[in-house]
Image (cartoon, rainbow, N blue to C red):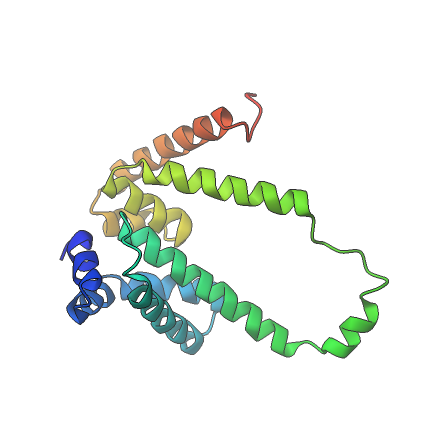
Amino acid sequence: MEDIMMTDLMFNRDEKGLAELKAKYSRLLMKIALGILKSPEDAEECVNDALYAVWNSIPPDRPEKLLPYVCRITRRRAIDKLRYNTAAMRDTKLLSELDECLPSVYNVQNEAEKAELAVAVNDWVKTLPDKQQRLFVYRYFSMYSVKEAAREAGMSVTAATTALMRMRVSLKNSLIKGGFFDEH
């Protein structure tokens, strides 16, 4: 089933859209979550939470590109779960004693620049045709090998390698135009 049909079904509150989404992308979502969490149980919980979040967000949202939307939610859920898991391991009393003598690693300017860069990259990805967008997401967001990303995007390895090279050049040029890099 096409992504737009799944989105329409979920927008109309038809659970078949969610079932189709799960059937089509659960393997990819699991790979994203597992890459971050390293625990199959936590990754499965994260994917289920992400699918639930997608179901609750459509409507009112109606994403133009369902795959990046779902992957982004899954990735955020996995990062949140990782933060939760690592926070639970810390002795907060001991760390709070050190707060006054340790410099903060949080830098407002760096965080603002990261956010601007993320918006610029997301905007650039939205300009890609569907097949190239899927390839880019599989390769760089889900960290698939070129061979796996090519297979998932329905391309030959040679075509995928060439497309990825061209996309990197295009992304760099876009970021140069956006003022993120010098033109060296």
